[in-house]
Length: 86
Image (cartoon, rainbow, N blue to C red; front, side, top):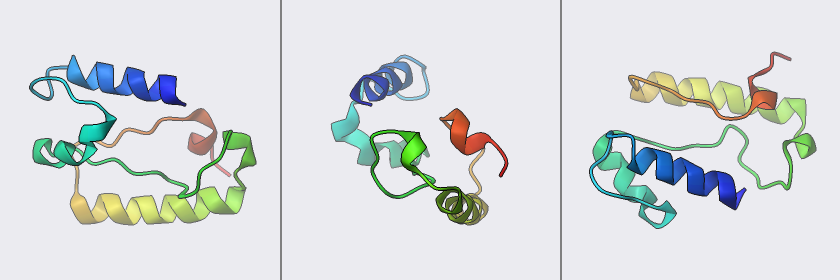
C-alpha cells in the first residue's frame, strides 16, 4: 500500500496540477488546489478481498452524496473491485 501511495504523490507532484512537490504529510494542502481525497469504505484492511459488498454499497451511496455536495470537476476512483457493479 505504501508503494502505491508513493506513486500517487509522485504523479501528482509531476502532473502540473499543483506547484512544487507534496507528499502524504501534506495531504491537507490539497484543498487549496481544489483536490480532496476520500475512501469508499472507511476501514483499514490488508486487502480489498476483506471488504463486504454491503460496505461497498453503503460507501457508494456516501460517495455519491459527497460528490453531489461538493460538485468536483473530476472524480477519480482507484481499485477495480470497488468499481464492479453488485
